[in-house]
Length: 55
Image 1: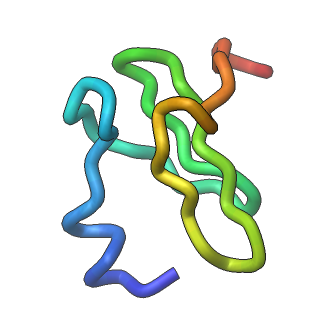
Image 2 (image 1 turned 135 degrees about the horizontal axis):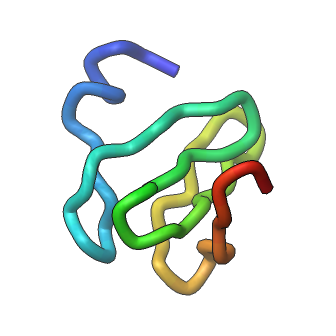
Image 3 (image 1 turned 60 degrees about the horizontal axis):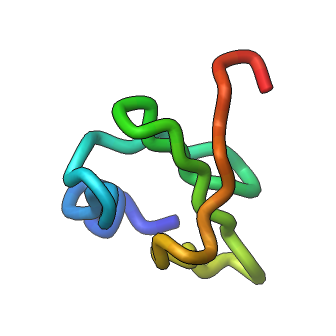
């Protein structure tokens, strides 16, 4: 994913900072994990899954 895109993306639910993994983007603030499908981040709240540390 492009570094410029990473710099401007925030969590759509809480505007928190994001952690980027290979297959998902995680917001630790509201504990949501957004999928990355075919290299495209799906930053829709209704597509997010619950995230727990270590999970």
